[in-house]
Length: 92
Image (cartoon, rainbow, N blue to C red; front, side, top):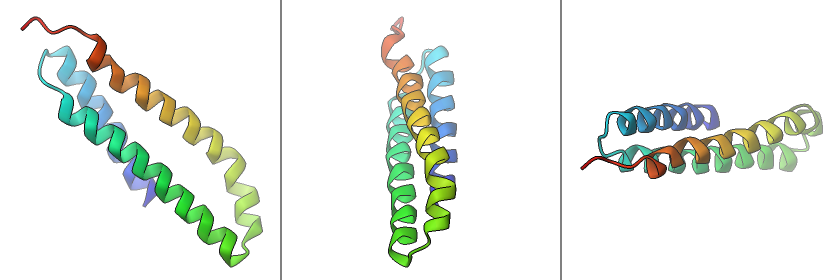
């Protein structure tokens, strides 16, 4: 589920930038992107919680070190990408 949420967040972020460059209102895409970024983090945390409760330590040791860094990077990237539409001034 977290992968699907992450893909939706990335697509919405790209659409946010494209619509901002074309001087259109991009608030909806910014909201969708940041919302799905948060849902991605929650879904991943839920999956890791399930592994911890079921005692699947090998899955935790394999996945958590790499993906925790990736999730930090992607969350910061999503914030920066979505802030483009806030920083670009409209000609309206």
